[in-house]
Amino acid sequence: MNPTDRHDRAILQDIARRAMLERGLLPDFSAAALAELRGMASDATTDDGAARDLRGLLWASIDNDDSRDLDQLTVAEPTPADKVKILVAVADVDSLVKNGSAIDEHARHNTTSVYTAAEIFPMLPEDLSTGQTSLNLDQERPAVVVEMLVAADGSLEDSAVYRARVRNQAKLAYNGVAAWLEGNGPVPEAIAAVEGLAENLRLQDKAAQGMKGLRQAHGALSLQTIEARPVFEGDMVRDLRAEEQNRAKDIIEDFMIAANGVAARYLESRGLPSIRRVVRVPERWDRIVELAAEHSFTLPREPDAQALEQFLTKQKAADPLRFPDLSLAVIKLLGSGEYVADAPGDTAPGHFGLAVKDYTHSTAPNRRYTDLITQRLLKAAIEGQPPPYSPEELGLLATHCTRQEDAANKVERQVGKSAAALLLESRIGEQFDAVVTGASAKGTWVRLLAVPVEGRLAGGLVGLDVGHRVRVRLTSVDVERGYIDFEAVGSTGSR
Image 1 (cartoon, one colour):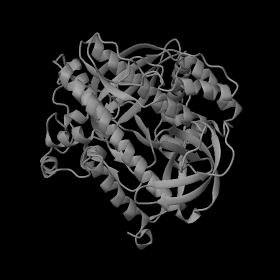
Image 2 (tube, helix red, strand yellow):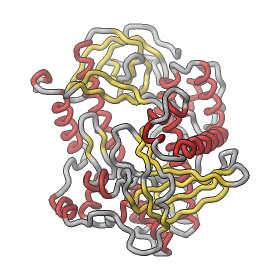
Image 3 (cartoon, rainbow, N blue to C red):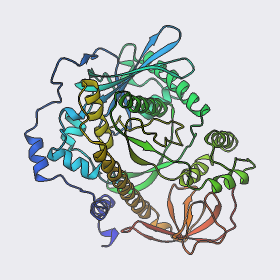
Image 4 (cartoon, helix red, strand yellow):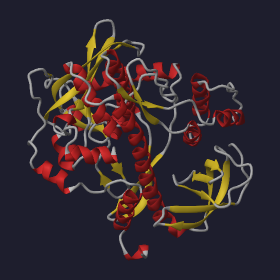
């Protein structure tokens, strides 16, 4: 196929669908799942009177500008002694998607929504994930609520988990909320339209900053990467736009980390098993030590999250422009996360990068299957029912979810690289500054500093390792396979 014969979006959609199938993922729902959807109730419901009525609170969603599958709402309530009660409402997807149903079987197979540059492959049919089970604006919905009492220093003093009915009062976007919180933009119209919401969001922001500061003091890593999203002009790729961390994202990130910890401990306290998300000690700590030494910082020989955080904080202050490149190198060296089953009384490895011991995934059941599993376990615990999964079944599901999530990530990366290849195919022969993001017997990979694109360094280079800088020339691209190849043309170093 000649890329000039078709629009970029159509090319990328074809690539995405093939990549899904090659990785063992299903791009389409079965006839049984679609028939089940047609016969489904018009709305998610609670089937008894046990759910609390919290529809009157100032709930709001904060997500990407184009997000339509809204999984959570947040709200804050002030309490005496400068403490804040934070409530996180998670969409009760289980109210409609029953364990063992045809829709559930599709979700169990893929285990996650796959977000590619040209097409989204939702874990659940969009009539559910963006409609009936989404916490949409002005819609009443059932939810599982995690309630947390946060002290002035960011510590968690108390928590509870229960079912409730909620109503989204404002659909907000990260960038607009962040610009307002950081003093770089006006208050968004959706906030100004709801009396008291601005003050509530500032209270949420204050609590989130305290929680973040406390986690960092305990060794949570201040990593900052640049995620690139293709920008389409019509159906043609015209640019890659970097998505960066901001204050609004901090609110959601810190509340979700805390809520996931509460969910894990809640299940443990009631004698139910869980699936934990873990990141073990770094796979290549020795290289992280070398990388720090190249920046005149000494790390201990044994993995130490607090020491690593001190190094990252120092470098972020010293060189904020290049800090995302250092973060990317550290992330590659930390190794990937995985899911593990955890029975009551077991000791899960914890999450090295977040500096938390008890951590599950529970806050995105519209788009991630582990969260739907956790939701079913939480509802069983709330109602005093036996767990819907045995420890053995959870073990198999944990392994499966790890494998499928890895496959989904590879699909997203492949399509992202194909989009980048489309953008760069007219720039073959140009030179760029780059940072090494991967170095092994399989090859050497670099990411450009000016354009957030990653590719393979043809032939590699002796002595080159993650974090080193190198001058490269773009030699070729392959849109179909998502290949972008470079050759080294200049000296290397750590800075």
